View 1: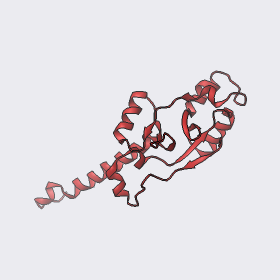
View 2: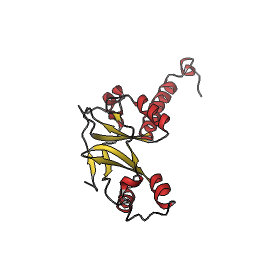
View 3: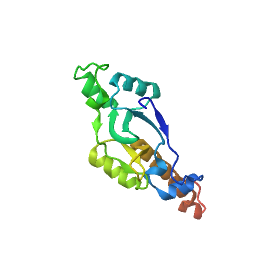
View 4: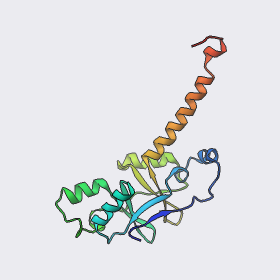
Length: 169
């Protein structure tokens, strides 16, 4: 369990990307591939997993329930800068315990509010049973917003008033 990447199917997964956009829930845009850690493993093993999988955070789970989050910043500030031995230091000693989570059916706006209030960029996404189903990163939200703005831009360009008047730009 300490070296796992879990991929959880979306509840009531829809095949159409447009239909998914209509729900605008955290579960509709979160990543379902989540790298996890065990609180008893060494931070050296966790850091190597982060490097190998090219991720900036591991969700620390106990029976797939998020009990902490370990970020690259935690490793820098709480291990390296503190002069701790990465092999002897356990994840539980330096993780951020009891992370704020978001239910997969909650709105993206709620996720952004949680991130802003807590000053963090990632939220574990949980199902109704509290078990991990994904991770919502601010990057996921920005990607969605950028796509929506691009769509609006194309619409505005297509319906520009100068075209109604027969002018060329």
